[in-house]
Length: 57
Image (cartoon, rainbow, N blue to C red; front, top):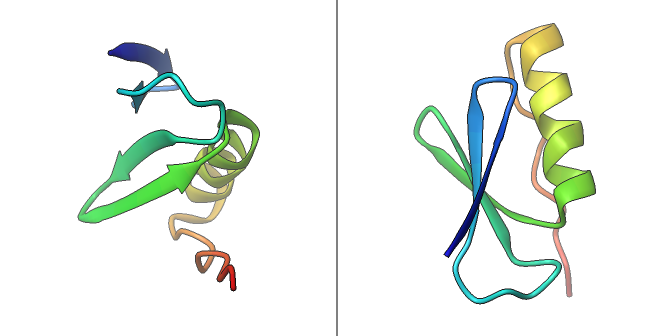
């Protein structure tokens, strides 16, 4: 398992796939690429809320 600590938050990746990082903020769990999750951390630290999750079809 890989872990990255970024601005007080922990990103984890248990299977090594590029777009399968996990971020837990409060009671919400987000999964995605490091770029997307870092963007969500910035959004959360600036505004105090998370952006709505992207819906993939």
